[in-house]
Amino acid sequence: MTTTATSAEELRHRMVEQLAREGALHSSEWRAAFDAVPRERFVHGFTRRTERGLVTYDQDDPGYLEAVYADDSLNTQYDEHGTATSSSSQPTVMAHMVEALAPASDTLPVLDLGTGPGYNAALLSHRYGSARVVSRDVDPALVSAADDHLAAAGYAPTLSVGDGAEGCPDHAPYGALIATYGTGRIPDAWRAQVARGGNIVAALGYGLISLTIGEHARATGHFLPILAAFMKARTGPDVAPTPARGYAGTLATAEGHTREIELPAKPDERMPSFLGSLAHPDVLDLSMLIEGQTRYGLIHPNTRSWARITPNTDGTARLDHGGPRNLWTERAPLLEAWRAAGGPNADAYRLTVHPDGTHELHLGEQTWPLPS
Image (cartoon, rainbow, N blue to C red; front, side, top):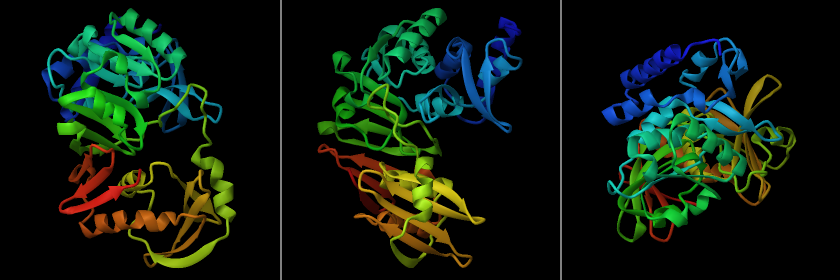
């Protein structure tokens, strides 16, 4: 390698200081964990999004360590469509998530779902001790590689292969649970396996949620102030669903019902995207440039329902849609309420997951049931 270990330590310390200045890290325990765990042990090769587009780095490349300690997500695996399926998540996002963890006790284990290269499991192991950390991933190859990375860094949490939606019942109950991949709804198994008084910190849609487990496994909590786009959960290591861009041609030319609508916000802006992801956990969103004009597309592959929104200059838009579901009509009330409330940030929203698994979103006195 072309940079010394001392330089790695310096870069790591600078990253920690930046995270602290920006408010992502605020406890001494988590500062110590981020300052101690060598991220380079977990990402021997990766791609990183830069101003020049995606750039690939290997250990011997100039700028490798600087890229390792940049505040970026580092993608380490892709599927057949070129969609990232494993990464070391952006340090700012991980810092916010781990700082939100509140285990129910000092003895129960903490469950880490989405092992990936193992960096987050190492942070948890440094903070809580390896004996109190269980980490699970659906991909056995990732788990095997993470085991090597963790051992090289001096950590030995319990690793498991399986579907994260099932939690990890073999080692339950847990004091807390953290999931570092995107999910559309909180699985029942998570609430059942976390002890009362503990919490779940997860990427729900484009939001980060912290939920405390109460009586009868009811979960209540609030969204964190930042948004993040995590890769979505996979049900198996070889599952590679068609990405949103794969439907662009269909959405650009589809014909259906047409009407004029008021457009409360551009669907691809950060808060409308967040609310859209909560309303539609199984709907794909994309933006398309057609004849020099941006158009927005929604598609639900399972029912072949679709919507295409073409904005006008006066705040209205043309809505074309087809299929058994009117996707825009389902989504619009959340966007309209957000605009009427003055455009609040994500942390203004709360979530309740009832014992029967139904989800309710709250903003002030307003409540919306979220479809299963």
